[in-house]
Length: 173
Image (cartoon, rainbow, N blue to C red; front, side, top):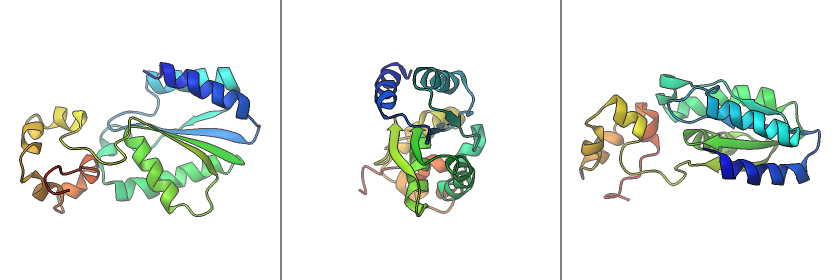
């Protein structure tokens, strides 16, 4: 999954390594921080570069559906504890983790994030239903194609579901 990315990252990090650098990784929607893909990423990068990788244990599985306005400050508490150990931090966010990272960087004055790497994150939003949401609510994908879906998405109820916080309405852009 991360093959080409890992090769490029290990080359970059091998040349930029200092003992004051750490990598902080946030997982995506509906995942756990310690699934095999993320553990492989951690193992590979640490082995190839010697730079410690922290997989942040926050908003796993269904708790990743809570609104981003709650996830960002809650994750930031944990991330600040880890980041305090380093002069510089490389922020890696996979899928929704990239969106959470972006929110943390924007609200974190005086952060020590040197590099932000967003992998498969819908930074400009996404039209339609994310795959996890479509699995949980099978009819959501067909409904999300409706021109009036935005009314639900931007309602109070819609904004209580994290993937709808980054919905990009193709009809009312």
